[in-house]
Structure formats: C-alpha cells, structure tokens
Image (tube, rainbow, N blue to C red; front, side):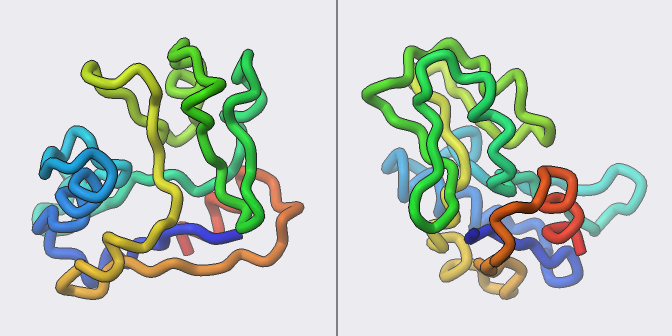
Length: 146
C-alpha cells in the first residue's frame, strides 16, 4: 500500500506541498483545498507536523453509499459518482485527514499521487510502500510516524 511519508527533520514549513496539492486537484493555490496540512508545533517553534491520509481505510466503514474503496495500489479512493456528500467520512476519520471544503460537495484526501513530493524543496516528503495490506489502522499510523 502506498502512503505519503513526512520527515519533520527536513520540513521548514514553506507550504509549497499544500499549494502544489491544491493546484493539482483544484487548479488553484489554496491551502484550504490541500489534502496535506502542515502546521507548526505550538510547543516547538520552527518544527512542523504534517497531517495527511495514511490509507488506514477506517473511513470506508462509515460510508453509507460505499463511495470509498481501495484501488489496486491500496489507496482509499472516493467515487464522485457514488458520494452523496454526507461527510460521515470526514467526521469519522481518526486522524482528521479527510477534508471538506464549502465549495465542493465531495470530500477529498491524500491519494499518494506524489506531486507534493516532487515539488518539496527540502525533500521532506516521500511515497513509500507498506507491503502488509493486513495491517490495522493503528499499525499503519505507527509505521508512517516512524
């Protein structure tokens, strides 16, 4: 399963990844429309954390229309055709990585496309393959955080 991995040691909080993501998917540089969110740690100024989908799949369990499914790479995808915009997945996501925006009826999330990885000037992002598809959501979070 492909996941976006963040290296906090390399991030300077520039926000290029957020702008690149929103430009790729929404054709405008709006950080509120980015599937990855970078924030400065309040207790450690100059240090940053990333929040993005780790592909745990817990959101799939709450979708009433089965609009959330895994693709062949293990990425959880949202079917715009099946999604009714109830936002159950947004409210249920255990790491708050499923996004919603007032201008769009369908929520969005990181699909590990790698566009942000290519644009990060500090190489703070990478796409990695977690081969064990049977991992629990907690195990996935622990591997991604490591």
